[in-house]
Image (cartoon, each protein chain N blue to C red):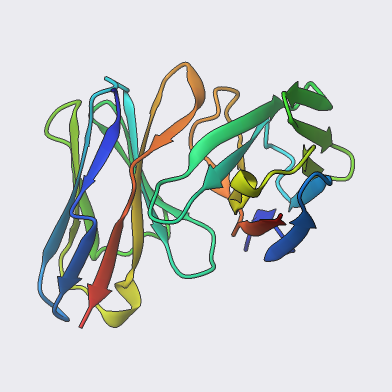
Length: 113
Length: 112
């Protein structure tokens, strides 16, 4: 049973607009959430994270929102750039140090110029 | 640059023929993980090490084994690969303090 779900396999956005990637989870013990970005032929790289004690974390163009009651998080990219085109993985951990991650299946983001 | 290196990038093996995938790290991280990712699916944790302490996931088939001879190296052994074991295998490391994983580039395994 998938504990972390990314229900949109792909998303296409115009350059300069906002990209919103969504993630739902079922395990209420998850304490720490992360987003990873993956280019073809490379391993995933860490993008941004959020602890369960927060509802928002921002880093430049990237903002992650957490709604614990809905067991939902989202990644906002504003403004979107063609270089943001990649696969985005949502991940969650029961450990506050973010170890032993459970991943979603990923969302392919295409930013059109 | 400190990094996680997986060799080889692509591995073709015959059905039933043992194969070993390797992972090395220069980050001196305590924790090393092996994930299996099949096409369009989520990466699935197979096992991980906290230093030399091996932790197997309950649903990891017995066909998959791992060795960690020292901090820097970790191996994934598939004793008798089946067609269903064809996948991308991702190695990752993290420190006990957390702050997320560092991934290798992965090894894509093909079983013929």
